[in-house]
Picture 1 (cartoon, rainbow, N blue to C red):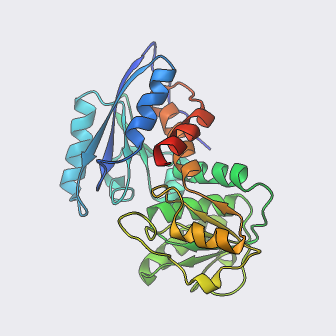
Picture 2 (picture 1 turned 120 degrees about the horizontal axis):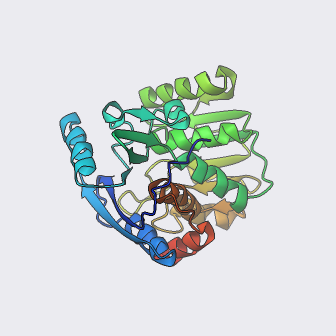
Length: 286
């Protein structure tokens, strides 16, 4: 996993941004700025709104302008994680494998794309649900975040991953990407029915802006674990229903904190306290 950027020599002040839709209320700004203060650094984090359908020219211009203005890097969120790829100079191996980035670092004359989402989810699953079976996992959502979740699950030993998405083309595209990495027999497209060890929601259903439960409740069983990558609300309707049934559950706060911790180190060259960042996320989402 190549997530280490060159350490800025004697640098203690950083300008970082976030590009995406509806980013004004993102927790990334307080999360990064507070951790920087804890480490004796000065970091200013600027959300940059692009709307739901940014053009290539807009994204290219934002990246060029940010580099010219002295930004150390940019976080990238929906709907830009795949759309920014043509405007980067190179990608880390993981970002290449996933075809999506959530972190851009300006290193010399290059804009380098990384993906820390998969590492954040994988570490959150390992620490938040230790020891759970994961031979067969159902994943809801096949977008940019879903690519990272599926990649993390397959890397961690999931034998069969079933992708469920209302857009068949999107599910098929992600299935091809993951099958190229892990083998066609380990990735299937389905409807979410049938037995499984666990279920992960990587769709937006359950967010404050998209309320609801992304799967029929009758498909949840007491003996399965349920994870959600959504962190606002802190406990989604899906997790509430799963807890009512007695399922072990995992909220999205861990993925948010841990992917941000990796990004923070890429931006600053300084290793953050990931446990402290997780406590901060939990306080912000309480």
